[in-house]
Amino acid sequence: MFYRPGLDQHGLAHNPFKALVSPRPIAWVSTIDADGRANLAPFSFFNAVAEAPPILMIAPYGAPPEKSEGPDTLRNILETKEFVIHATPYALRDQMNVTAAQYPHGVDEFEAAGLTKAGSEIVKPPRIAEAPIAFECAFLTRTELPSERETMKNGAVFGQVVGIHIDDAVIVDGKVDVTRFRPLARLGYMDYASVDAVFDMPRPTKPDAAKP
Image 1 (cartoon, rainbow, N blue to C red):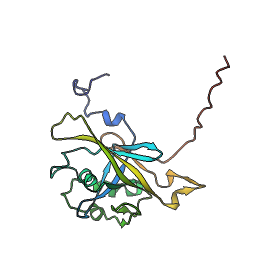
Image 2: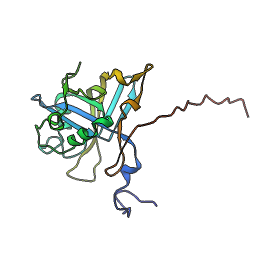
Image 3: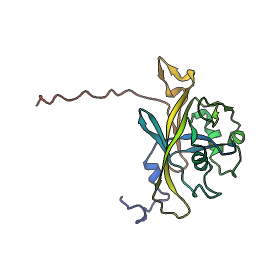
Image 4: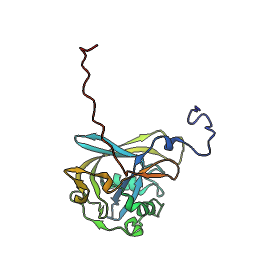
């Protein structure tokens, strides 16, 4: 099949786009507002975009942040210029799902999900004590993107990682073993996956141009 998004009907029961771009890692993002109130929310439009310095990107979408119904995460990042991104382990899948709800502004999702706050080393937002991986981030820039829905704004937020927390229990022989915390990934629809197995594939050496 072939269809043009926004122009053609795909004819399927549900929009397949997010099922086709998968798996997507889940960023579990903690922030604080200008009054110091904590917020926690997951985002599956997320990835690393640079290594030196390390830079992460999340793409929160929704009502414009200046409106009261806008996403707390985006509003808080723009106000305080700091946030923490956590890897989401399989063991905390239910707690992550609790924080995906649309709570009123000011509700503490840490408390709603029964999670423990831990102090960050450099930034002010707290981190999830139970999470095995946390990236303390300083806001770099926000890029607005086209949107076909008037009430929903698309955009990407970039943050430079200024501190990294790793649970020693997931380090084996000097390397992070992801199967020890089984990071969650978002698929399409209401489907999720976790990393339960890995395999090694060394990069090929540069071909010898002199050989036929």
